[in-house]
Image 1 (spheres, one colour):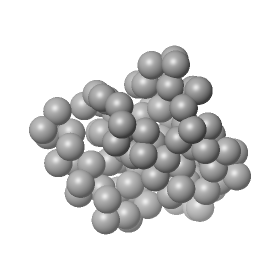
Image 2: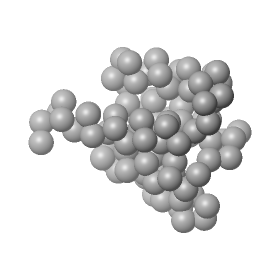
Image 3: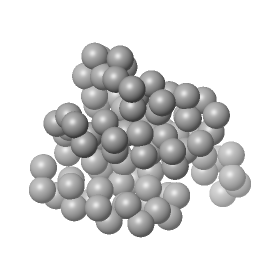
Image 4: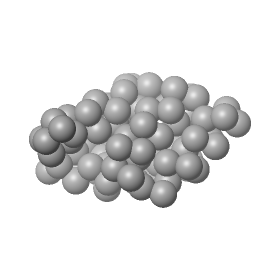
Length: 89
């Protein structure tokens, strides 16, 4: 798999997590930054912003699963934490 293809899969996971959030999340600072980072292909930072949103808001199991999938593809240690969040939700 080439790098642009891998980025597309990661971006799809991040967007899946984002789409599980309520519409009003778009006005929150972390989600505005998420979108900016995503637009600049800063996928790890985009992932961090989704997690930052979840620190102050209740999110679904599907959110954590999608974030785990993205983090796993990026080989981030946070993937384990996201898996644990998904299992406890």
